[in-house]
Image 1 (cartoon, rainbow, N blue to C red):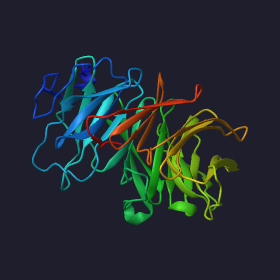
Image 2: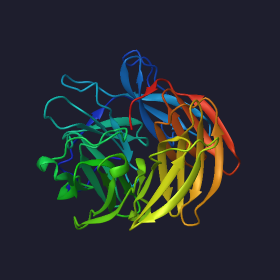
Image 3: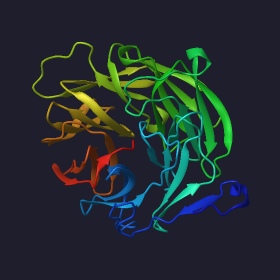
Image 4: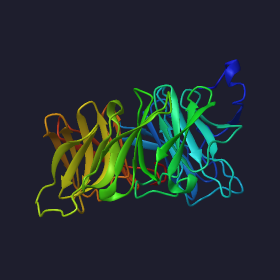
Length: 351
């Protein structure tokens, strides 16, 4: 999708001719943009490549090589996120204090388009319904907080209009933000500050900039955060894990937040909608994908995935839940109890 309105005139687009031809930079490119339901980036033959995934066909293919420039940061991970209006936006970091590069993945046109402007450096993009939060310094893997601005007392959250990328306001989240999650159905951002068992959850209203304290972890080592309906769900492991043969989930209320404790595994990824939490729980060499009813406090479904020792990404698709681990992807149908794994053309780089 290209921006056409007068309000978007500042978002001039540089078209990158990277559509389905093979051999670009030594990378064989496919053509099935429209058949791809979801997208990631991967390292293919030393290049950052946009990969399209068709979960129904259990197929992934390289579609576009992200053009490189002098000053690109090849250590920090790119971001590839879907906005509420369906657009896929890619940011790639640069060295120094320069803005991240900003691209749109356009499946309809079958190309990658670089915006003439960059976007906020070192910020995680968290899309709401009409607004997008750009949260400063959040680590890509949820492993802990980076340095907050203002001496660590608060973290900058820039709020952009999703259609024009105009900066609407700046909000301040308390402390150094460790995890951030948004609700695409509303303009709400959930964040945690503090690490592990000391995590504290807050809710940022992107429409007003108002920040409200939500609850604390209460001793749970928080590893993942979800934000269904703008209400924080903190997911992690107990400070003193028990010796269980099977990972078990329990929940409790903590103010306006819900804390879900997973005993017997590591929580690699979590997503939530309504009262349903879906968590990818590592159990050593394998992974359990568990659906859990946070209102009733009971497990609904579980599928065991052999040989998946980490889950770097979890997304819902029309064919089931998609988990990505390094250079493989697995589609899980929780209702049928099936898991089907297929390869990626390279190793996952985006989050």
